[in-house]
Image (cartoon, rainbow, N blue to C red; front, side, top):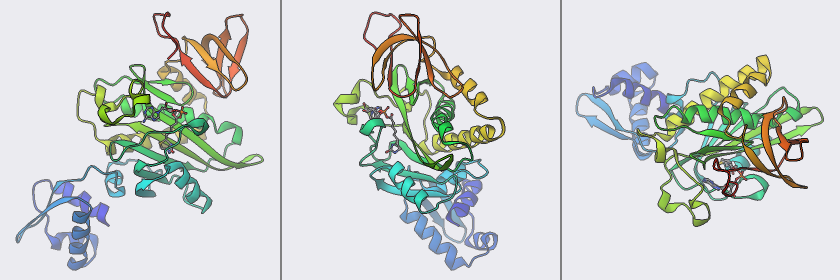
Length: 331
Ligand code: BT5
């Protein structure tokens, strides 16, 4: 209901929309309209009441409220159910709890901050209040568990396309789960899964995008390697717009996978990759080696031609890219 009120007020622009019109269009009493307007004001919406004329929406709060996201969203089903919290340990953990309770396919969990944001291998993810997009998407795909890791690549394509819409932003994907901007980390993706033999119960794709994180608050240990969209964009960046664009892209890519398999998504991934064609250092669980990243295979594994001429497929591990000059250390 509040989403619809915002939609109508937005469409009205600077022209006041009367309580009577709202009550007619929404088929609720004027008292109910008034209560919703008060609730929206309490959420931080600046709504002016013009005597005898009605309401004008002057400004929306910089929060990722469901009503805000929904008005920007073009999806058919993904993100139609949004679980919003101001603060959480990790949106992935909360999404997994909701998935265990039987939430909808396509639920999105969004938080303004994470107190225990997670990366891979129990590493942390810095997620300060109201300056990034920290969210998780629950999917219940019909494909096999061994296909799930490709969802990370799918999500990376969805995100890189969304951030590269901004003038001045030219981000690229580093295998498997990072998006880099000018060699620094802009986005991290963490995919988790619950499966049985031959069947996925659910996948949670957690995405952290540094949108407007001021450099001054970034912890020292990641100051030199973290970057925000706003650092490079030549125009204002709205968190809610990026979030909605990512969800739109995710739905489109996911539906294309359901129809045509992963091959077209992997082809798109290759276009945005900054790993392929580069000298890389691979730190795998059981060995460390260097080589040329030549491709990803149909399972999304990175194919590396080692210095001794043999070829290795990377299933898990950290991959660093050697700087272009070839003399510095791996990044
Ligand atoms: C990742 O792990 O990059 C996956 C991060 C996923 C975060 C999202 S946010 C929503 C959802 N809920 C969660 O709890 N997680 C997901 P990994 O490749 O292991 O990289 C982690 C490393 O990135 C850390 O050890 C730091 O060095 C660095 N790092 C941490 N926070 C960062 C930030 N905000 N920006 C750039 N780098 C960061």
